[in-house]
Image (tube, rainbow, N blue to C red; front, side, top):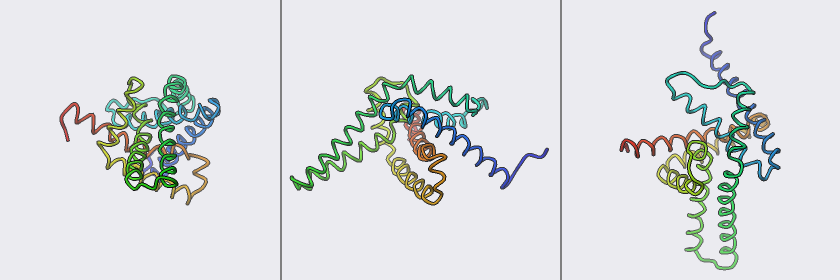
Length: 219
């Protein structure tokens, strides 16, 4: 039988991607609920990121060997990483979120009572850096095995070192929002994987670049 090509091949590829995305969406929802939402959402996001990152890394492999994308295989990978990372990613993630919340509170206080442009500028810069850190956190956590506080440093360094990728990530998430607004059914099927995929891709490229700089001296 002749292999599919052209628009037929593209349709099959898109269908396969949407199917994997739907499986990841279902796993995300189930395990977010298993953690009671508050404690479950960050490990579920980290596990979804891990599986998306695995697919991106598999494309760069030369041996052609990668785990299948059956639901049972995805579930096994997701479940293992979810429970292995449960407490650590909650600690790392909620510290970052608390910092962002504190900066937003400081901005509100400054706007209401202090009215200092200098303080406002400093707080905005710190908020951008904190949001950039959070954007890179899950990819860094999924790619590297570090000590608790080293994840903060690694995420901050890579987000600043490849700020062009950080800006590209922001633009990509905006475009995903436009796409979901145009095709609302995607929010039901693949909302989380669809938002995470460009974030993981651009942050993964930043990781590869920094690794090349460190190991090979490539700029």
